[in-house]
Image (cartoon, rainbow, N blue to C red):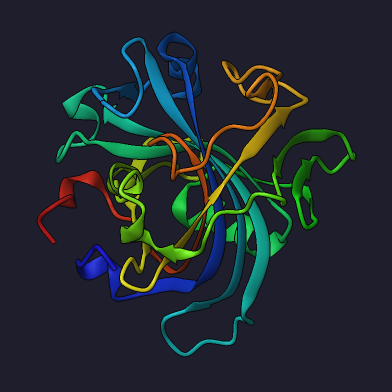
Length: 266
């Protein structure tokens, strides 16, 4: 794991299959995904005038609190949209490190307990949805049954499962994913900014390149338009380009949330 402070001694931990897609979108559209308290910062992962948006299609299982408790083990699906390289827009809003942080404007999952806990304790903008996973597609719908988005991957050209260090293109992505999460407490709407860490155990994590396509059927976030990414064919895997898609398998640990004033000092 990558982070050590007082707030990681009590955490939620488990294992996961994490299918990741990095989109390169116009920066002026990505800004619409941020609250007024955050702004985009410098980054080199995508070309000037654009900003990365990270889509994750998770299978999370055996989630448990790291101390004796009566809460049953959590297993669920979760789709998240993330904006890395974000910074606190004004120092007086949250004294401490200004960034970079990883902000998630929306998450959908199919389990009430982690949805409620994520909103109440961490300030994540989590909503309940319906998620169906097959051998080559991950489909996210709202509770009314309207399809919001889906990920498809080429099952005929799956990459080789290897340690993450075997794919050099993944290193800048790994560093990006190590950015602390920033959220709006309470309930994902604020007004308070909170930090937490979604750490992966990189020493044992494995990676498989995927060729993918993402379809957005309903514009459920401002700036995230209905479209197919890419417009046709498959997006390349992480073995071909830094913004390539992948399937990451790793143990994970989600720390307790804490105020930004404690960033880097605990």
